[in-house]
Amino acid sequence: MTKDPYPMSLRLPPELHQRLEECATRLKIKRHTLAQNAIEAAIEAIERNGYRLSLPMHFRFPNESEAATARYPQEQEEISRVEERGPAYSLKRRKTN
Image (tube, rainbow, N blue to C red; front, top):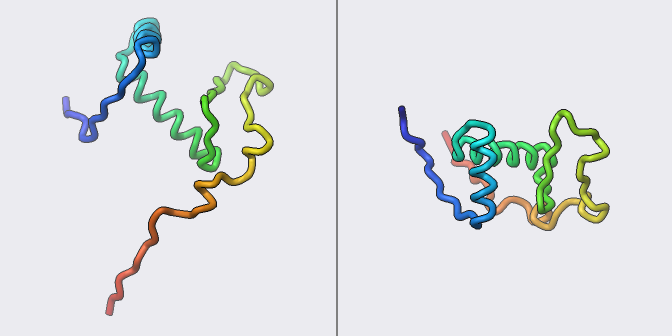
């Protein structure tokens, strides 16, 4: 078994840690597997939504109706201030001869 090349530590409040533990136990998977999949799902949802984020995040499962899905408030449908600033860096091209 190979070690993860990008280890990461998370500090969770006791209540959230307990909920994570209970979910993992009921699903019969490890806590880190559940947390990793939740983070991946969150990142995919943010990417699909044009990198806009509203907290707390809500996910919709296939068996839920479209009406139950959380929507952005009207004023947040516009581009965010972070997106208005543009990227934090610019790409410099090297001159090649």
